[in-house]
Length: 568
Image 1 (tube, one colour):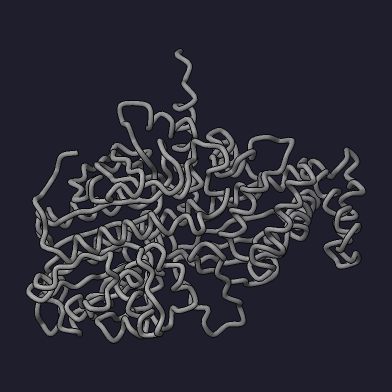
Image 2 (cartoon, helix red, strand yellow):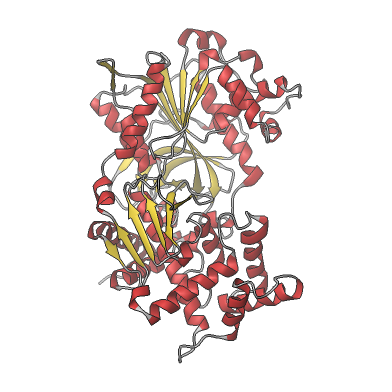
């Protein structure tokens, strides 16, 4: 039998993990310490996601990966031995505390000190994401337990000292803090410097203890949970998938309500007969590009000559920008469906063109003649992108009339991992390749390298739509990059958006001539050490690529369309 390559082994492991996760969702429950849970852990270790760093090394606890996960899971997750994933629960009139993680729009409730309930609104991608993070945390917890326990079941002195620190018996300052971090570094198999950096990031410089319990408490809780598992079967961590979650998967329960609310708003404003331009982006860049300069002028402040220099000056002036935007055509729709996707609807004909930044080139005559409407929707999450776009492009019914919207363009701006370049570079998709499936979608992208005026390195080629940020393997990505696929990046939503767009064209909901635009800026390079998502956010270096793409998209929408160009 021919030996499998590293890439083939990793792809098989990813497929195994996905298959197991799908099966467990249908089965209803599993224990990470049980046979199925161990198989999940084995698969995760085998394809060794880049974002989890040294997870597969039994000698050390992975700190950057731990911080990445903790930032995306509810506070206290490390204490829990009972985790429920459900499709719909109404906890509004209960004593359960609603908890939203720092860096993931995820709805969860603390039922008790050891029980958390996740309300899944984004489909299977969210399930994969949570299960992957739980599996990672359990792997790291087992490492801690193996490090601190001797053959007789006792624990080491460093663990006893950590317990004192967690219980508040030590004043963590000066030499006492140094000693506590040194003891913790021994438990973690990490250097003092590495442990200190993570401690400070979690406890001080990053976000205090509003979103997490601090490194000492997290590590202690993870170890104690495994110790208690060994003492009693009743303490085993168990994950439950409720029947309501099983019923929700594959049905657009949240997406239908979300899209209905958006279309009702457009119809209510009398904008339904106007040309509509859908933009998937963040909730600030389009608004700042169109209204930021006007807000500064209204405040009596000078407007920097460069659009990109203007953006930092808007910090702390969000209220002024919002006020001006609402006076000149923008309405904001906070999500009420549970999809966690806010929307802005902009009547571009109402924009004060005299207050636009001089870097922005707009055809005023075209604007008054066509009166375009821009619908900016916040980022979707993985497979949720198909659900919301599929519902948004469908006709709707108001006042006993069937309303089919005039969709002129669909623009997707997102952040993605880049394969040939570096953070801050830009990628333009020519196709989306769905990882782990035979589904591939060619994109007639209306964006070109010369649209970006040489202000950033731009890479053009297929994008890989991955199962999740935590399911990225270096060998698989290297294969996509160096083989005939010649992929330039990876992201989570593009293939799902394109599947919905193709379906809408086939069903006659939108024209086959609709302008499609996909542009991504690189938030990380998973093939380069120190440039994965776990290394931290982009900060100020993300301003230029974000606003460069935004500027190009806005100008494409608010100027007469150029010749259709399908070749690269």
